[in-house]
Amino acid sequence: MTNKSFPVGFIFLGFSQWPKLEMVLFWITVVFYTMIILSNSTIILLSCIDPCLYTPMYLFLSNLSFLELCFTTATVPQMLSNLWGPDKSISYTGCVIQVFIVICVGATECILLVVMAFDRYVAVCQPLRYTIIMNPPLCWKLALVAWMSGLMESLIQSSVTFQLPFCSHHVLDDFLCEVPSLIRLACADTSSNEWQITLSAVIFTMLPVGLILTSYGFIAQAVGKMKSKEGKQRAIATCSSHLIVVFMFYGTGAVVYTDPKKNAASKHGKFFTFFYSVVTPFLNPLIYTLRNKDVKDALKRMLKKGFSIWKN
Image 1 (cartoon, rainbow, N blue to C red):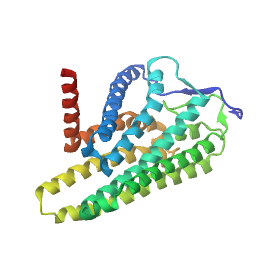
Image 2 (image 1 turned 30 degrees about the vertical axis):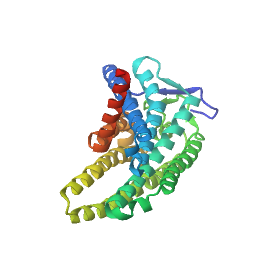
Image 3 (image 1 turned 120 degrees about the vertical axis):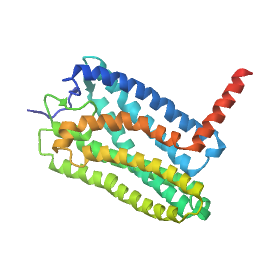
């Protein structure tokens, strides 16, 4: 049976078949969410107040941190509510908003990671022309392109998805409102929706990964020709941090979105969703800060200044 009118809301199946696991995931998510808020907010703050971080790299990194904050704020509180208590529901409006934000932020991050790879390519392969090529107007335009791409993708995917007639039980085998789980809930032919989401996955995951790997192929050649050992180590540390984030983000997202009705996506999709909605935003700032001397030095300066003010 289908309900062609707007449903009252949706019910998440989530991990309800494993109550003990729900409690474990709840406290893990609380700790991770707290660290996500603190770490990403710190990166944004440092990028704004420390003159040493007024560079394109940290402009893009602060944009990435803001995306992580938007994504987790739109998803994690609802997730915690569902993991903690018996109420596993979400309103129709809440689901629409969550889908819109998830798609917008996800697609924007896909493009932003390509922009960051381009920034690293120019820094390593064209160091003498870096400040000329990566000038502030261009950097802001690249960031704007990433955000506008995510917004357009979200508008298209959200509107198409919520035009589907959903089955009357409104039970989602997930703990978030996502396009793949909504497609599986539809009681109608969803082949056009599946093709559309697969095409979007190719455009926003496979194509960006190809561009990123190409840029890092040129970077690897340039690093191999460097005579300075310190320069090599700095380039490798910065670029490897970006590559780790790329593989974590694109790898888990591609499994869920490339073919939304395949077995891996339907049976294990919620585990991949949990990883890229909680674990990846938690690891991203740690990867960038623990392996980045500039950020650590900026943090020390901020703490030292704060301590001096407090002492006086």
